[in-house]
Amino acid sequence: MPSRVKLVEVGSHNWRALAAIAPKPDQAKWVAPVTYYLCLALYGGEWHPLGVEVDGEIVGHLMWAVDEADDSVWLGGLVIDAASQGRGIGRAAVVAFLHRFGEEGRVNVALSYAPDNLAARSLYARLGFSETGEVEDGEIVARYVQMG
Image (cartoon, rainbow, N blue to C red):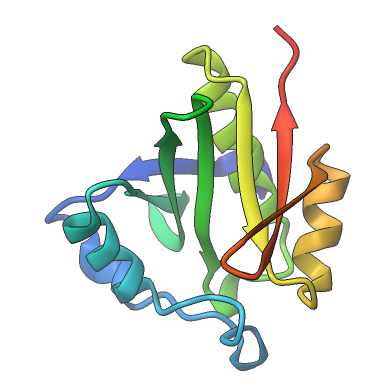
């Protein structure tokens, strides 16, 4: 399953599928509705949404932004639809994200998560993210620096 995960641009052809993405009910305390993320990308001026696609079907969302202060790429808004969880799609989406931006020469990737979101904390640690001691909007910041 994970090898078939692709990150795709969001547009008129797939935004409705993204808007329908919903996490498991107990995860809603850690993520906003995908519609919020889509509005943030459209009107906020910094974030860029991507769909997480498996076999042509949108099953998740993530977004990215560049922090001009240190040229790091931020990953945010990762939401995998409840019906598609448990198959390694979230992990594969993060790996695809790292690969995509690594190929562009952007090797410093940052993200944040709620301190009590143990699943996210564990996933990102297994993928090589290290907590930095920084806090962003009450969330723990972790960074991944790819070796060139």
